[in-house]
Length: 227
Image (cartoon, rainbow, N blue to C red; front, side, top):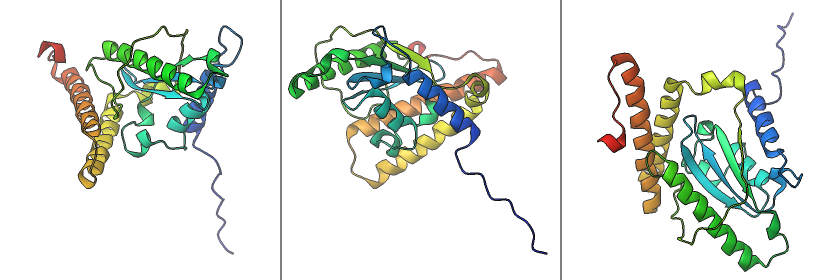
């Protein structure tokens, strides 16, 4: 008699499916106008890690849900493909929808989105421990503008948070991202911005490893501002 082998189940792992559901719920949060935030065609978004550290900012003209899902699911973006952004690091997302841009001429939309993205970028830098985020491209300078009300939500289900944010897991992931990014840099003629991202990632890894070591050694951890 031939041995019986069960066919593998089709679909994504349970934890991935749970995160996608949480992401969908975040994108479906309703704004004050009663519309789902992810349906805004124009907007700016930011990602934060498990420490609340801002790590990435971007803008979109193709709906917030489309752009954000492209970053965080299987539709890869340049930032993910180049190992600038590890989707595993993203804990919170924040979105600024611009509902009033519909119908405006393209040049005006581009100018307003650039100014809004720069405003959020400056806000993130001010909130960052490293005064840096992982964006590899230089942000064009602009006058800051008034932002619409934002929507911020966690995309990691509660049952997965402890395992996902475990420092040893995060250290291993971050070290792997740095190694992959360094390999990309060693094989290509890249922009200075990508090297800046490598430096920022190295600083983030060093701090995470230092905090983890201090938990076992009982030594205080110096912050960058104290060095």
